[in-house]
Length: 362
Figure 1 (tube, rainbow, N blue to C red):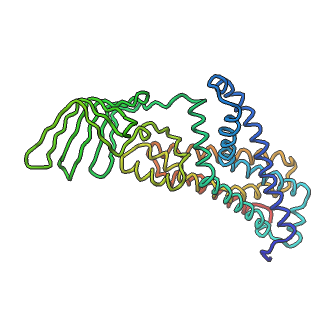
Figure 2 (figure 1 turned 60 degrees about the vertical axis):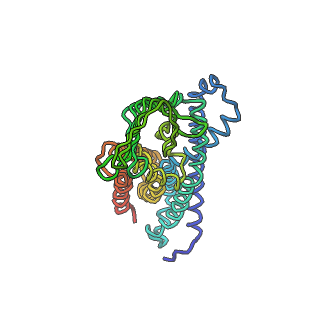
Figure 3 (figure 1 turned 180 degrees about the vertical axis):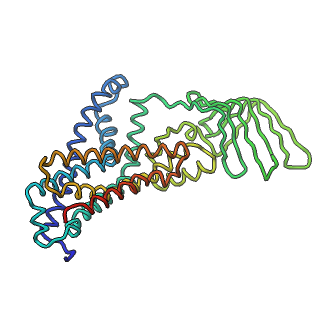
């Protein structure tokens, strides 16, 4: 059978893409209504303007929501119109006309490719800058200021340079028991300690109080101490006050740079950055798997009609989204590498898709 487009191909693509975006519009409307009712008190209490709510928050919330629940919309689109084709015996007519089930999947996968590319473009170019505005609005009008509650903070600033803080106060940007060490091999070349370190915005550095420096770079140890000392290091308050979900606002290049920096520093939050990176590619790829599952499920005419297919499809789509989120827990507990954990749902549902394809009507 030729792979060239025909009337049936154009019909299926039109129905697939049209139903996909129609489902998005319906769900976005419902979600926004519930979200407004939940957050209206915060908007009023913190004085958010109507323009800021509509443009800065919901205008940037829509692409984020579309992409996050894209698997659900794909399932709904495929199962809804394919079940209608099956109930009207159109699929039987297509197969009886000499078009194989495999060839019938061609327009479905063309549509899935378009949705996957659309989702990938959103992930890499649209959503990160949109999330930057949305998260800034959230911090200003919905959530309270982020407070770093970590203690005993150990970070590597660059190879051989380490910083330690016993505590850090996000409200005042003050660190206690500040230590800066330079190590070569197994030898401490220099060690700077201070009772407190305060972030100074005027010169974008740290002002140290009651400092003590021990310099072992020469044969004779040199000791220096004083009341105050200004120092600039590769660490800012933004690094310490960063929410875990701020990685959603980083583009692909920035995300890779952040991962390299966090790995070098030994920052435990690198997990969130790695999860975000792999999810941006795993989610678009799921369009092909979920499309195959949806067609294989709904191509058979059932006595219960569309309802049964929709019920099974919704269950599978929600289970996929839930499994994708649940698999991230394996990363946090150290049970699986990030790449494996994020791609496990796709691999598992690919097996389900192949099984359903084998038992689908041919």
